[in-house]
Length: 125
Image (cartoon, rainbow, N blue to C red; front, side, top):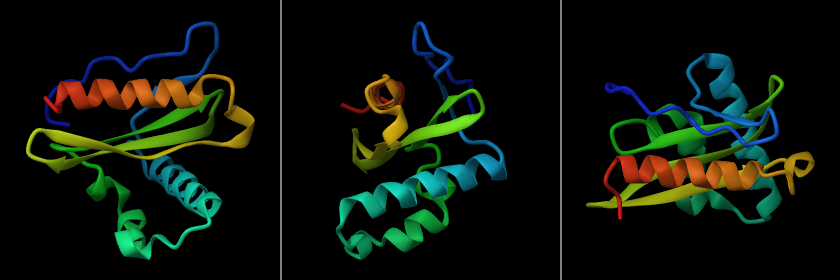
């Protein structure tokens, strides 16, 4: 991002935190999680041009209109969520996913809250 971002939230009482992918390794983990998410749906996402999206998540969810977050705990990436511009003044949360082992522990909620905060930061309704 060209401007400083506010600190990302951490789940109280756990070491679960949000990370914006910055390194190639983090983007590889983001891709792994998005592909895992898609596999759980049982729906062919080609109508959404999914292969192009997952081929370059940084471009699909990059600034200025987007954001992408990973849930991380003790060096393990446990979930993801993206934000994309849908239309003027409107953002859309995409690809919210928590691995089965992270469900019920607040990873999904932390990701959703992080994306909502990112949407507000960008002025989305």
